[in-house]
Length: 291
Image 1 (cartoon, rainbow, N blue to C red):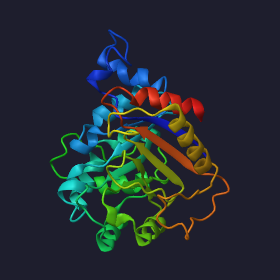
Image 2 (cartoon, one colour; image 1 turned 30 degrees about the horizontal axis):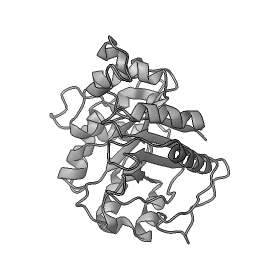
Image 3 (cartoon, rainbow, N blue to C red; image 1 turned 90 degrees about the vertical axis):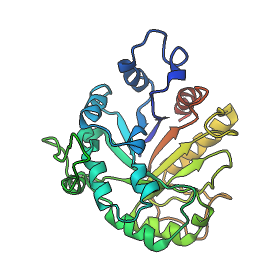
Image 4 (cartoon, one colour; image 1 turned 90 degrees about the horizontal axis):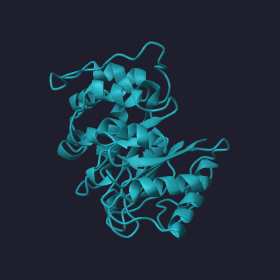
């Protein structure tokens, strides 16, 4: 069991001269962050297809035990709304995530606020997702010419059969449905625990051997920091999940249907997205100290 804590992204001009020291060149920012945290969420991949050379550079600038979560493209989630996305998925995986090698962690799929729960739509999408790097490479081979610098081969020595885990963040109240929780459990996909200062629903059911947490702001979305008391509370939750427990709360959708026991514990990843006022890196370091 591992608990990894980081930030959602790292290229933010307001961080310069505040979190990043004055004079630190931009190419050193990821390395500076990785000296203090052990994971980061790549969110540029949500907005556009990145280049494989970028992924390789990011991997080279981080320690051997560093892990990247990669945010799935909005073309798949927001424009196509999960339907007819075979080519979109192929393009996404061909654009460079595989170039991270052993540093490739979970893939995040954030659904738009206007997409309600449709069991058939979700089932179709979950069945498409590759579950190993080898499956992702095979899918990537079907990319289109939209990918300018395709990466469809695994590095020599890569474990093609290791698990490639996925997480889904939802933003519509209709997902407060035990059927959705059961569906994610059948596919082993993590339900993202998203703290959005009340803007979107928070669901905290454990659905996989991974717990994925996104902290968007304690009292103000993307802007407010987390108080010491709040960080203490989150630390207690993280320790419980990592120990294999599945505590229930008012945010638990299916409290009467707990997940299977996990005597060996679960992996937990946490990403702070309250970046506007430079709270994210400091909150991440403070929570990491508590864990």
